[in-house]
Image 1 (tube, rainbow, N blue to C red):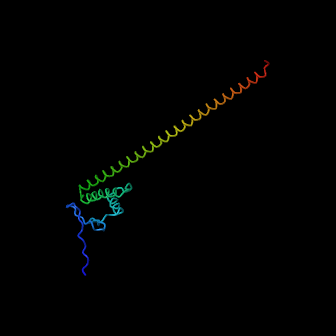
Image 2: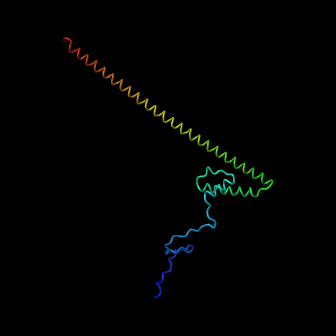
Image 3: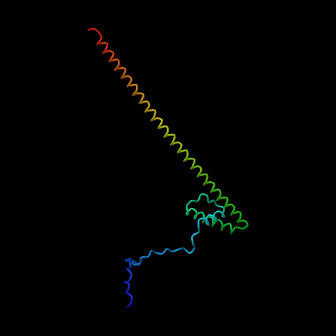
Length: 167
């Protein structure tokens, strides 16, 4: 007997995007013609171009710096004679930009440290003021209690004196 016939694939209603809805397999990923470079390879290229890598944390940052490094290496490759001076100026400009970025980061870190110190000082002052207010209230209450004891003792003494006095 002939094999059973498979029903025709179901198609989406949108004519511009015909999709086989009966296919259960996940869609295949298309890989680019060139494989992705590893972070290690990209960092090696960045270092070869004379750019720093210590601040690179995420892959996107590494990829962006890698593109700049490739541009820089291409410029240096094409440089000859007067172009070499241009390449040196470009490299010097890049180093200055990196130094400026590092100065900004140090300044931001110092500002954050100062703000944290000021917040801690304000918190300690508030805690000290609160403790002083509690102590003042405690002392005032103690003074009121002492005055009440004295009044009670005085009243008791007068009552005793009045009882002991002849009528």
